[in-house]
Length: 198
Image (cartoon, rainbow, N blue to C red):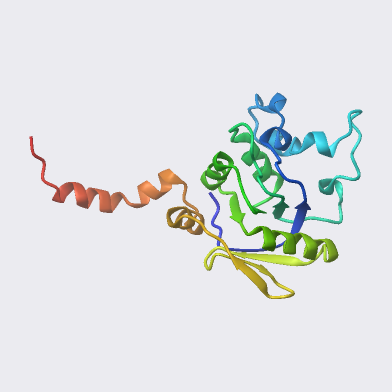
């Protein structure tokens, strides 16, 4: 995993609720062995019309808007528990998603793969959508160290929660195995000190 401490970026707004994993990456693409294919098919049924032409009204097809933060409506990632949904979002270039609620399995898959799910209140989510609509090129700061989402122009912010263990993994770029390997000395010292009884 890549280290994540502070991310400053414009936002790509997707003002829809209940976006499920089949909308993120349709099941017909799950057999692909090349993970880079997943980014190509992220939201594919929304990015392209049925005849294969580009849907110019879909936000990801707006070449003027680029960013590493996806802003979504409530209940993002519901539906089936496919890890491919997280891979496709990461491979497309997003590093974080902001919503007011994430489906549990999607949230865990995100945390385990290096995609930061930032959960804010419904009130602050609406504020972000409204601000982005009027200021599409404005930047937002996600400060993982202080656990804050900040609207840079107005200095408005809100705190978000993340499990301390997962926060450590993001700050240092560890996955679960990296974390255990990093504790090798402590584990060996513990094994030497403990008494074995039969």
